[in-house]
Structures are given as C-alpha cells and as structure tokens.
Image (tube, rainbow, N blue to C red; front, side, top):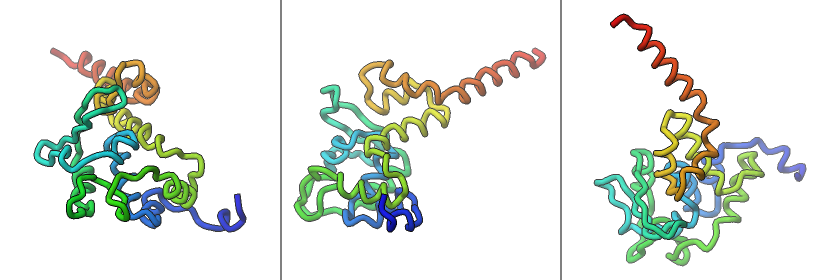
Length: 182
C-alpha cells in the first residue's frame, strides 16, 4: 500500500464510484446492490427488457441458461430513471464512448474500492451484499434464491447463517402468541 493511499481518508464505495472516470460506475454499483444481479447480466441489460410499470427486469439468458425476472425496488427504479439515455442505443448502462456494453469495469472498480478503503472487495461481492441485505431484513432464503436466480436451494444456503436473528425473532413471536390467553 502506498504512503499516499494510506494518507487519504477512505470514502464510501458509492461516493468513490461517483468520482470514477467511468461515469456509469455509480449506476452500475447501485443497481448491482439493489438487484443482486450478476455483473455481466447488468452490463448486457437492454432498455427493452426493463418494465417500469411491472417493476421487473427480464434477463433473457441467465447463468443457468434460462430467462428470469428480477423485481425492481423503488430505489432501483429511481436509479434507472436517472440513467443517461443515448439516441439509438439499446443498452441500459453502455460505455458512453462506444455505446456498447462495457467489456469490463475492472479499472473503474479497482479505483473506487481503493478510494473507499475496501481493496479486497470484488465486484461480485456486491451480489453477495445484496443477498445479505435481503436475508438480514427478514426475507426468506427461497425468495432470495429466486431473486438471485439460483438454480438450486443449496446455492442460497450460504446465506442461512445470516438469517439466525430473523429466525430467532420468528420463534420468539410464535412463543409470545402461544403464551397469550385464548
């Protein structure tokens, strides 16, 4: 780690992404965190597959080879509403210089994560963060797996330890209900 890096004060990843030379990086980071999508799925996303009224994004071919719909939260829809539109460009978050999907966002991400003081965070970790946020908010593992497009329940099981507090709250609520007089 360079001395100049150590002297800089770390900032949030979102702030660092906003300061990136890649003007789309902030939108990409936000949408990855809000949807749990895979990076390539987002970089290849097309406007025609986003249905704002239904609050859904169709991924025609996912890692499993099957199409899937990703529900879009109000926060994700707000990010999509802010995206720059380029005349005749079908891509949701294209490279503004080529109007084609980014081949890679590696360099922009490396700069953002270092500025945020998170040098070991991979871009794919944002997908795991999205899943963790859902589980820690009480969303059941089946629903999280569906949002992420997991082919099997076992893929989602890695987040089960995060659900412990939620499960404890569930059994406490059940016990409290049983203790009430009929």
